[in-house]
Image (cartoon, rainbow, N blue to C red; front, side, top):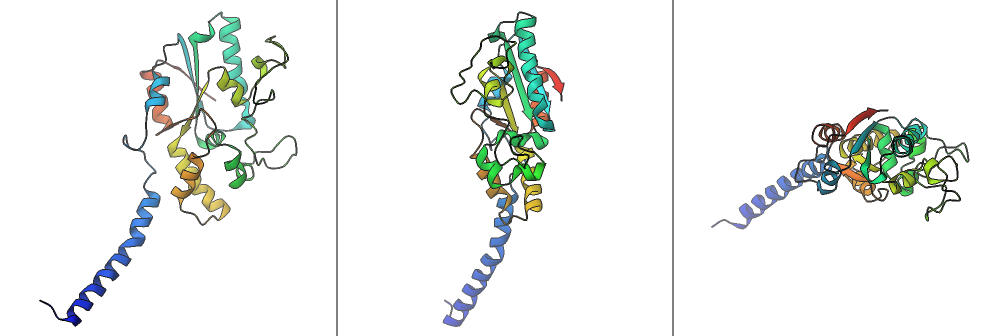
Length: 238
């Protein structure tokens, strides 16, 4: 048995200890996801891409945004393989592995506007000449319905000359998003924009606003290695 004074002293010490531990736990939680382990994510979507049975498989390793020029390269791959070499569409699989700055193309207009991605990465909207507040690389010029005025592959009014992410996805291209890049970029974004949120708060917010169809992988450099060795994808860095 203990007297009242001893009890209060012991209780106060316990509360103080818990209070001292709380900030450490919070910080650990906020920093905990720099590296995904196998239990942190669901690789099912990536595995379907990895083991796609297509005859011709190509993986693009994309780091710089570069005005979205790599999207034109992917469009040319699809057109060249199908029209130039006669490969059936269902026997072609192209994957775009976006990391570094290009990873931000995997997020929708909400992210680009809220976190001022255009101003941060110096991406200009060609319509205004000002920093982009939307993901200008995603939407098709044909609109959400993807209805085109022409089926001629030489026509700029056909899907075959549409360089948008939306059109390329419609043609079967899979865009991969790097979790490690997102974590690193969020920390750089916090410093650049003097944000007060914890990194994981922003990461979770971004992951909730990805473009439709984008697939998150734990690490892009690791995913590309698997695509080449196990998936038998040819590799192209742009």
